[in-house]
Image (cartoon, rainbow over all chains, first blue to last red; front, side):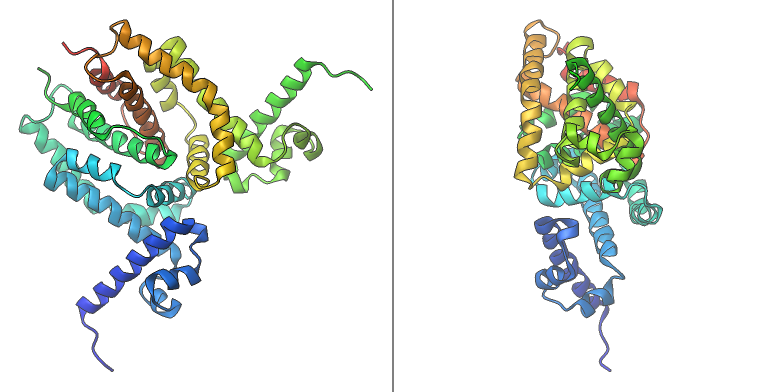
Length: 185
Length: 185
């Protein structure tokens, strides 16, 4: 039997995720049937479910990937770039993310799986806000946890406005967010 | 045939809406079967669907009612009270609202019906923001439309954090929102 390299496995996994994301965004979660997942990934159901136990596992991996991308963006390039990227995110994909997180909020197994995927990132982002405040780049009269939560609220609110199809000025939004959390003059 | 008063009709309609909201919040939209709608409203399906053509029409009426309540709160008691009320809103009901608006975003008929219900309110809330700015209670270096949109983004973000079960400090959030949109010192 040929030995399959780690790189090959990772690449195949990424292929599946990319195709599945397209299918979810295009048809919605329920509408992304196995046949459509095959079509968008270019792989057979056998191949797809060799890498993931079920459709929900693919969704959880994609949700975690989206989360990770935004947290990395904040930590590496700052909040402004994260807000701009959120505003440029696919409303179709955001719609699926928000729909599923709302629909499955009472599903303990789903919640646990999302949490497990999210937990390592949580430490990274909280440390960033704490450090930004300690370095004088955030106001110091409000707990840094609340500053982080406010930024999260704004990012979440932008996602929901995009899903609703409501236009807004990204730079004006950024200016208001920064005026809320920047050091007071 | 007995003449049914307008008041009676309106009261019956409210009864159906209140029961349906409980059913949607408790069981989710799909889980709120006709049998459960009967149970929560205390009325027969015949009575319920005499007032509303279908389940979606009940949901649209409830979504419009929630919208109206928040817009009235802002206009009559200010943004702070609206933010506090949003933070105290049932996460279960918010979850159904957000799920359906995300799930049905490509459903033109649904979008049109929501919009029709929302349009008369839109004028009311935009006039409020314009007037607040003209009266010097909002910063004047950012268009009042963007101030209104920012407040909407924050209210939406709070709703999504509640649905995710993530705790936050309402008064700290309010302070940050107000610092973003208040006149600059």
